[in-house]
Length: 137
Image (cartoon, rainbow, N blue to C red; front, side):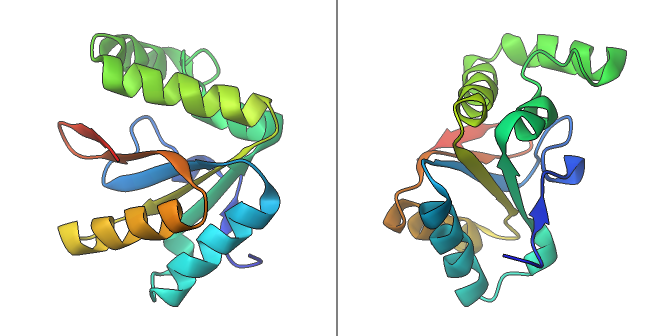
């Protein structure tokens, strides 16, 4: 996992548009999930791993760590339970020592392959964040 991004803000911006995100309970499963993405020939620079308190600060479900614009966008997302619940779930998992792996999906086929790869390596709370929708898998 040396070339993937670890705890970088770009992986979970104000809204992780066109990204599939999943929680992994431990580093072995997270590593296996990332390797599965690499085996799918996905660009490693599009793969992000969040972990620990730093990762939780990046997810920042309430937006308090990222300024007024992010706070406003998180408040708007709170009206849509899917986004709000997903953000809070990811932040909670990170605070508990788990990992969140997120990757950009260029097509529906790629999205489905990513979801399958995550699920086959014990990923859970798998969500695709589209332009106007969050799809739980």
